[in-house]
View 1 (cartoon, rainbow, N blue to C red):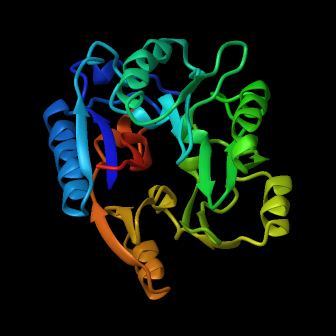
View 2 (view 1 turned 45 degrees about the vertical axis):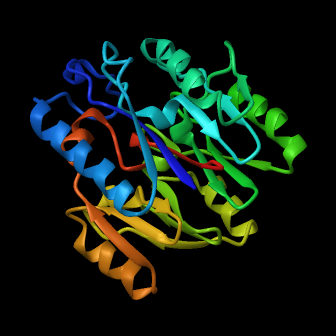
View 3 (view 1 turned 90 degrees about the vertical axis):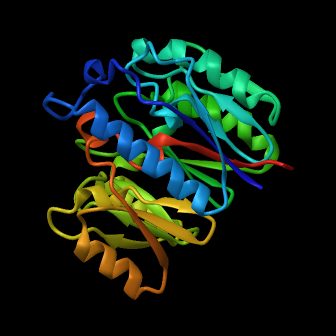
Amino acid sequence: MLRALTHVISPRLSDCELTFIKREPIDWQLAESQHQAYCQMLRRLGLRVDRLTQNSQYPDACFVEDTAVVLDEIAILCCPGAPSRRPETALIAQALAPWRQVKTLRLPATLDGGDVLLVGKTLLVGESTRTNQLGIQALAELTAPFGYRVVMLKPQGSLHLKSVCTALDDQTLIVIPGCLEQGSLEKLNQEKFKLIETALNEDAAANVLRVGEMLCVQAGCPETLAQIQKLGYRTEVIDTRELAKAEGALTCLSLIFRTPD
């Protein structure tokens, strides 16, 4: 079955790390309501949802994706680029231990899970303000024995790779125009990916959450949603825009992986 690890919204969410957007007031109750709806959506799609609580003292705790990369064979505990987020990983290691062998990245390597996009047996990894080349190299070394390849990309003007690029399927990516360096676009062309661009002023639609055959798309992006649906994909629309004020997106809010039960 598919299982999702999530974490409740911290009461300190307004103290979250911010890199590329200005701080503005966050309505905690609305953020919590949107997170509850997100978890309900995952349950409706057939996932077992485990909602953790023990990291509530950390403002960014709900963005669990950044703490680990979970593959079928192994889980890699990340060393987040933001020092304030590194204490979050102990709880995530504990939660993953029943299901995966857990390997741990350590400084000076840094890696955020939001920079890691799995497509088939390829890991597209963004070198960002949170993920460095040592982290990417360590990820490559840990996953190579299981047949994974790592392709390094460079996002521009964004927190993570998945802020600007996610997968609709293992051959098709959705991207924000101009948010990947030219060299990265050339790599994707060499890898024979088909690229779909988000509509104007709908950047949030670049972060699509794949759940089996379903694509979960951020609310408020009607043109991009219509484009995705026209291509024949099944879609769910979910609104987590209050959490976007904390530089969060749909994929950030869960770690999804397969377990025997």
